[in-house]
Structures are given as C-alpha cells and as structure tokens.
Image 1 (cartoon, rainbow, N blue to C red):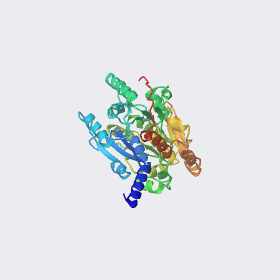
Image 2 (cartoon, helix red, strand yellow):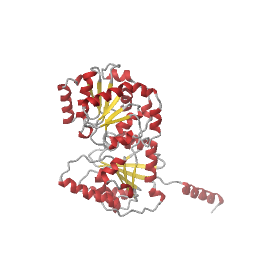
Image 3 (cartoon, helix red, strand yellow):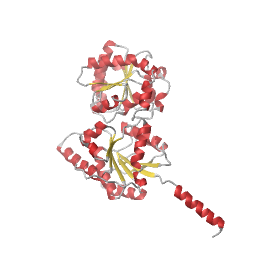
Image 4 (cartoon, helix red, strand yellow):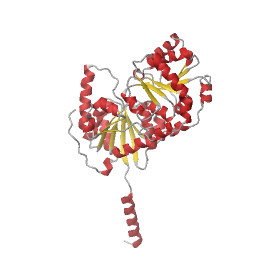
Length: 405
C-alpha cells in the first residue's frame, strides 16, 4: 500500500471513530391532530438536534393528522400502521427494519401493548409516557380489566415510565411511584419565543369585530368534557352581568354535539354576541398576547399546555384548583386557582380582578423570568429527554426492578 493510500485509510478510520451515531427514536401515538400532547411533541421535534437524534412517528389512524406538515418541516419521518389484525406483525417488522434505539409510546396504559411488541424485538429503551391523569373513558368492568392488563404490560416491559407532572404520575401509579428508579417526571415544555411578540390587540379586535377597549377573556382547548366549558360559559354569564362589554374568545375544535349545546346555552342566556367560537387556530400566541385573562375550569388535566402558554404570554390565569394545575401555580405566579365548588359569582369576581391587573402584570418582568427559570421551558424538557433517549447508544446497563403492578 502506498504512503498516500495508507494516509487516506488512517483519515477515514479516524473519521469513523469520531462519528457519533444518531439515536433513532420512534414515537408512537394515535394521530397528530391538533391537541395538547401533539403540540408539545411538535415543540420538542423543532428543538431536537437532528445531528444527535433521528425522530420517527408511528400513528394508528387512517391518516397521520392535521399537524403532519409541521412535523415534516421539523424533520420528522412518518409510519402509518392502522390498528387491526396485522398491526403486531407490521409494527415488529417496522422495528426490525429501522433498528430503533427507542420506542416512546404516548397512549396512556395502551402503551403497554406497544412496549410488549418492542420488547419482543429487542428494542433497548422502551418508554411509556403519561400525559394525562386519566384516559377519559367510562369505568366499565370490561374497561377496568383492560386497564389492569395493559398496566401490567407497562410495568413489565417499560424500561422507563415518564409523566408530564407529579400529579399525573401519582394518579396513574399511586403515591409510591418514586420508589421505582424507572419512573421520572419530565414536565411539558413550552418554547416561549413565539409568545414574546408585540401585542396585536387592535388586529385581533378588528378580525373578530370587537371593541379594542372591551375586556377580553380567552380559553384555549378543544370542546370536550375534560375542559368543562359549561362552567366556563356559566362564569362568563356572571361576568357580563357586571361588565356588559366583556368578550370571550374560545379557541379549539368545536364541531361536536357539546359545541352545539354550548352555542345554544349562549343564546338562551343572552351572551352569544359576547362569545367568539374561533375554532382551531394556528396563531394561538398572538391571541393569548391580545387577551386580558384566561379562564380555565378543567375537571382534570395532565399538565395543561394552554396554561403554560398563557404564562409564556404573560397572561394571568384563573384555573380550577386541581393538583395538576396547582403544580404549575407553585412555580408560576400568574396562575390563580379556585375550587370548582365555589359559586360562579366568586369565579367571575376573581376573573374580573385579574383582567384589571393584566396591564400591570405585563409591564413587569418577573413573570418572564419565572417562566424562563422554570422546568416548563422547552430547553429543560428536551435536556431531560436526551438523558432518557441516549441510554441506548451510551450502552448503560439497565437494572430493572421487578415491581408488581
């Protein structure tokens, strides 16, 4: 071998030694329609270093989802496997073909089924990620038996169990979850940069035909039982009694029976002209910046991204006093909690008070500093996920405790 050839061979060898292998992560989720968990995953996908992590998504529905293009623009790759008789075969075939280092499942206890298949194919890191305190399904005998089996599979096959907050972990695994070294909290992370733009109150008011000086309340969330829109409209009706010019902006999917019932309620109580059903929007940061206060009376949550987004937008929040939201209020002073059992009049009084303080709050810098230093910032979230994902490549041995379900 000539000196030149030997030198070139040495250079190639050194380059290959110095090349860091990317970690291949497969996220498994029902679909990528607009929703809290999906938006949080999109933020993560945009922040992840593509030279370090290769992100793939596997969905079960007949289509990937409404956020498909945004995920693709952020560098994600997709695999569509409809749930059916051939799912297990096709899913294991996908894992063998791409040799994923990590399977990261986001389907509550149903993650147990996916992680069982991943264990059978030898995937090194298998993560169940709980993003809510419950699955929102009826508590029938059949459902309880199904949950028990799936929960057992999660406990048996997961190398890591994550939750968006301590409350979500406690609700799903009980008060002793910290005794298992696989369990850890990775708070939902928000990219605060889109929420620091100048306020466009004039533009938003013109778009929805509102008076720019009228108080503007907002709620962000698809209309479903969990979000408790009935309480929200009942409280707003009380607000209008004392502040007739007040407006309420509802952002989220409203094309269901519950949405139609709410519109009927608004007409019956004479507040329909004060409420805007804005539907799904891609400019939520702009709308939050334009509002004066958020009202968020949820029945249960995981760690509500809408509340975190409001805090990133320096918007005061009046929310239900449930553990999942108190977990945010402990760290972010913009969040004020009130029990759902309190009368609508008391909710209305506090909402009006926060609305009047909104300008003063935005002129201060404490809210911005508090959010940047909190575990709810996207950088803290991604850093924690790197630690979990890269266990496969680092080769760290995994000592899995044999915990009973």
